[in-house]
Length: 78
Image (cartoon, rainbow, N blue to C red; front, top):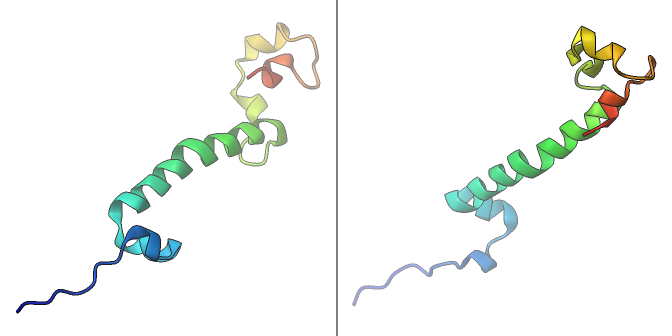
């Protein structure tokens, strides 16, 4: 008689074990970080200027169309 090793179900594994053993599960977490967390962080950075100098990305001519020279309205519109 042939016996096989007990198969562990995804619910019986811890989160880190699932990340290590299940490529589909780890791929879903990579996509979740890529399409949810990163855009949120980049959107918040638009107001804090920690990652890049956002006013430097505005075209020089667009500053004349914005009413406030200190913080252009073009920066605050999503």
